[in-house]
Length: 300
Ligand SMILES: Nc1ncnc2c1ncn2[C@@H]1O[C@H](COP(=O)(O)OP(=O)(O)O)[C@@H](O)[C@H]1O
Ligand SMILES: [Mg+2]
Image (cartoon, rainbow, N blue to C red; front, side):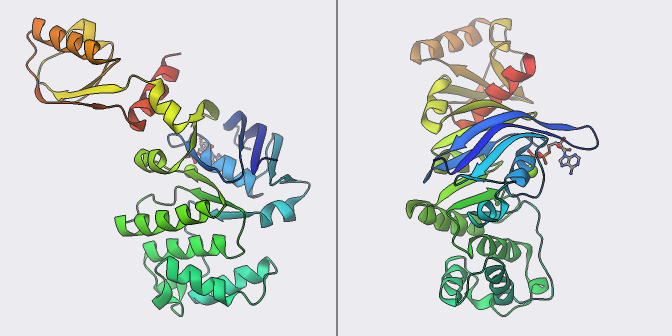
């Protein structure tokens, strides 16, 4: 049984926007899975359907074998969702918020776990603070604690680190990685590709409501040329390179298949009389893969 299963999920909003055009993939129990895609790709729509907050126009979604529509309560209990938007009730303290959430899932006498969550997320000294007194970063920590309060087997984080400070990111990833080691399944959407590269075993890339890549992270990284030349120049690149280069202002990136290909690129620059500065030759990272895939799709 899959931890999460999306089968041919389509979503068209009342406004006529087609956010998801038939998305299918499964996340296996214990996996740390990344869902990447530019703004508007449909990530939050997919997670809203998973959480039962939105209805798919068609298709089937299950969590730990429970259908999110027909078996909503069991599906929802299997999930801990950290939403993209900060939503909270300003009248309760942090501890009250977590106790209420526990009660919602029918979990009683949960204070030992609540204390562990508070400690692990750096919230111990904020337990009695009112939600409205907390900074944005602290509120986000509470949202994470809230998602985990009923110890769900499947944890879903929708851009949890968008705009949060480095310290929170590190606290969060240490904690989520520990839960994953302990057997929890994690589905993460993020804009920070280096996070996905470091954490996720498999990655699906979503673009305009369609899965455009789905692979092990290591395969995704190997699928592109392994080498990337990065340099700066004030000159236009020769036609032979312009096709394969990604240029942003003065900065250019050219991917190369291997060392011999690196020499070809350098020779073409030299022959064209293009002077370069700050030349670096490095490994292609997930960002390169992502941009390659997104650009390739764009050209179709
Ligand atoms: N509640 C909604 N009503 C109408 N359109 C929506 C709604 N939510 C999202 N959309 C549209 O659906 C598309 C996908 O959005 P979203 O799922 O938020 O993508 P992502 O999370 O990847 O940025 C976008 O075009 C967005 O404007
Ligand atoms: Mg989103």
